[in-house]
Image (cartoon, rainbow, N blue to C red; front, side, top):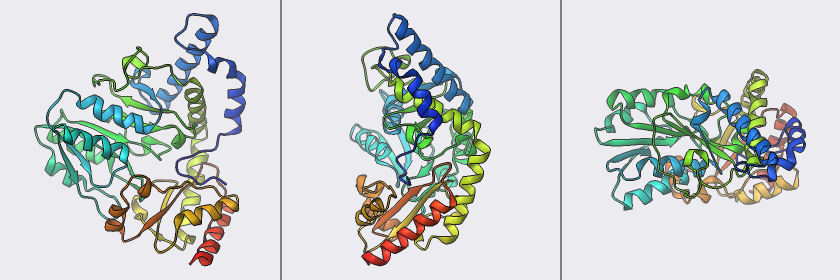
Length: 361
């Protein structure tokens, strides 16, 4: 059973599809030979599937290695050569926080707006800080440490009302269906992580609205409209596109199942939640842990055939102190429901966690 928020499990249909085209994944899509031409066709087809899923233009999808790279490209690529201020929150993943720290050292004024204990940011607070020189508003659509989903739609609306020239960028890590959060056409840039959409490791992409100009942070060839040099990861791209195709085809069943599992977990889980139930991202969960080694919990779960990730986001990102300040907990047990996780698996998972907690306390 996989509950790792940073991992996924490939559907059988995707594995079968990948095996059919395996030889082409070794080819250079930019080459002129017959096999490379076929590889290029797979690349074009994949971009089209993802664009259709997001209701965007094909040309607005830029493939990267992860949401981390996408965030760096969006932030550094857009702000290159400019002067002004940037707005974010005080509770962000390091792939947003660290590039902004670097830009601060280069002279940018970065405003870190306060979030509450759930990682929620009040859209009206954003309104107070958007000024004429505000170049970019950037943050996660979900606070990764707490599983809290933010009011992306309202934040964008407020920002654009105050300063239409301010660019809005959000990281959509952890969200299966972005249109549940916002119409992407209202957004300037959005980062996506492959495993969050049932894809493999090492693939992600950045949505860049037509008219937004970026400076590449990886230079070389002209791949990805000149914004991301280097041969494309065709295996990762095609696998991700096929997984997204299934997410689209099975949407109603997936949404119903995740809703069912979410309600069951919220009702049965005995730990203290770090999220507000009214603002929780579908399928994502975070629970506070005190006086117990989370690494030990995850190791013991692994021996029972339950797979979570470690280190936890707070330790990996160096914001454990921030987690303590915000929530009062030393650490966090985070997990994610995959689209067809069953209630019996959820029940077993909760039983395993409860048994382990009783043993290690």
